[in-house]
Image (cartoon, rainbow, N blue to C red; front, side, top):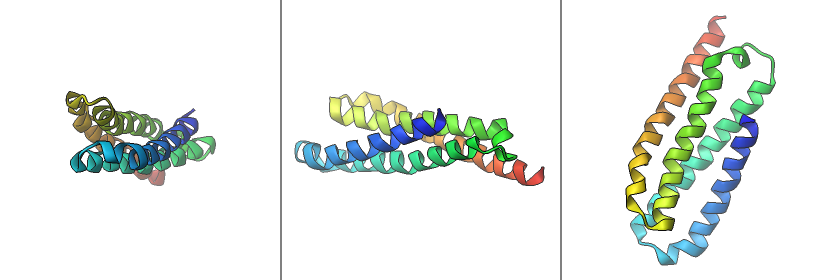
Length: 126
C-alpha cells in the first residue's frame, strides 16, 4: 500500500507541476507560483522516498521489520499531503488560510526523516 501511495503522490506531483506551469502560472502572482513550485518539489522528493520505503518493506530484511521504519512512511505520507496539498489548495481555490497546515506538514516531514534516521540506526545495531 505504501508503494502505491508513493507512486500516486509522484503522479500527482508531475500532473500538478505541469498544470501549475501551463495553466496557473499566468493566472497567479509570482509569489503564489513560487509557493506552488516549492510544494511540487517537496511532493516529488518525498514521493520518491515513500516509494523507496514501500519497496524496502517488500523485502524481508531487518529494516522492514522495524515499526519505526513503517511509521516513517506514514509520517512522510501525512507530511507530504499536509505540506504540499495545503499549498496546492490554497493557490488553486484562493483560500490562503489553508496554508496554516503547511508548517504542520513541514514538522511532520521532519519527524519522518528522524524516524527514518532512527530506523537506519536500529537496523545497523541489530
